[in-house]
Image: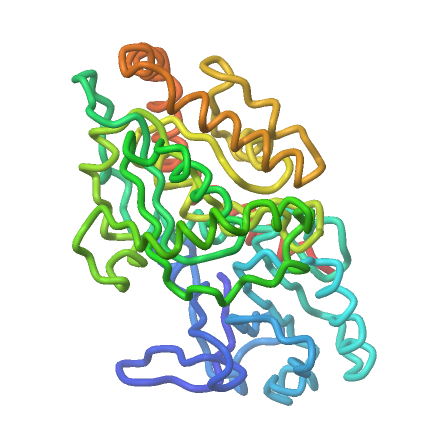
Length: 375
């Protein structure tokens, strides 16, 4: 039996965030319960010493003393603090901050669960792909587009809601060359200009400058939309838009990160999982070895259909340009050839659907064992 220590409860006994309003609800309780694991919640003062005190971090702030937010009972009884964080911030930096807090408060019984694969290389942090679990939880095991072999009218689907500098460089390249007409091409311009810091992305300034005019023209011509959904619905994983996947042959994934905060790790999000759910081959604008990590999770990719050597390119600039070239090559293929490639992809697509449907709960069990085995 796993016991979670909770400071306060809301209506109908709902566990409220530990650590105050700056924290999120302790989702781990629901994850464990719906996965059939033995779990209970207790008021922190009444919880056994081996209980976990869960803190769901919305956004890691290096100026915050997170242990100062902890119920003093937890520190006094040396209870285990479990931080849950689904972002890709560099685990080495988080680990360093946790070391400072551990020394300050004299408490080292804690584990910080993060969505960056590099986490397992450090003392306080450990990796779990929470975004995969959250997505599977939102859509269920059987929803989404299925494979079919009717002819499709579009080469690709490429959907981008939130504006980032590297994303609009990538998408403006397709637009400038008139290739956007061949796909379900969306660039919504949400949070336009908020992530335009040249020093914030690992692309060469000379390259960014060379694309500046095209980007400006692209933004002026937009936004580009393929639906009538609200921004809230576009951000809702349960809204699937299956028709886009059913009428196009492959997906261009513009992931959340292209370098995972210079950590060398990977972070899988719903952006990669959407074409998996909807049985669509994909290429990824993402971190180094993003595809390799999918293989580690049990998924298959599409090196039997096209070259995926871009995933092995460590230099982000070179990898980014390689995916740009590949996207153009695939979009320029005749629809008949893409139809043939899609037919060949059927075993991979069906395999990936099974992994998403069946493997995800096992990863939660692995996480539980990692937390339990932390000294």
